[in-house]
Image (cartoon, rainbow, N blue to C red; front, top):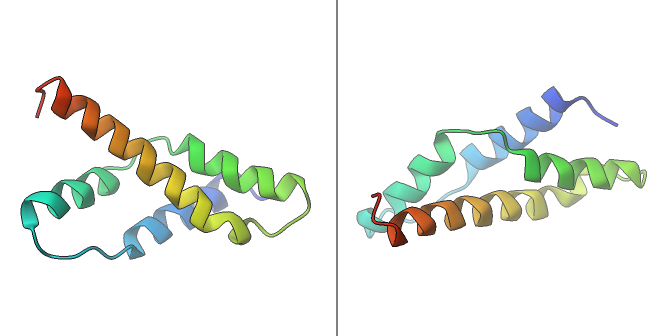
Length: 86
């Protein structure tokens, strides 16, 4: 199993490489912002670690790990919007 630092580097690098449309700016700017501010990223680490536990290359589950992180951040943003915190 890789170290948490290697998982973190893999996740953070991959999140920075995600591309989004430029328009509408009011939709995509908040998405870019929330993914750039970082966080613990525990969920995607667990996805990669789970893959390692079964003897597979964690990169095989990278898309799943990124999906989990993006969905988690979406739910946080949605909650803030619904609570009128944004």
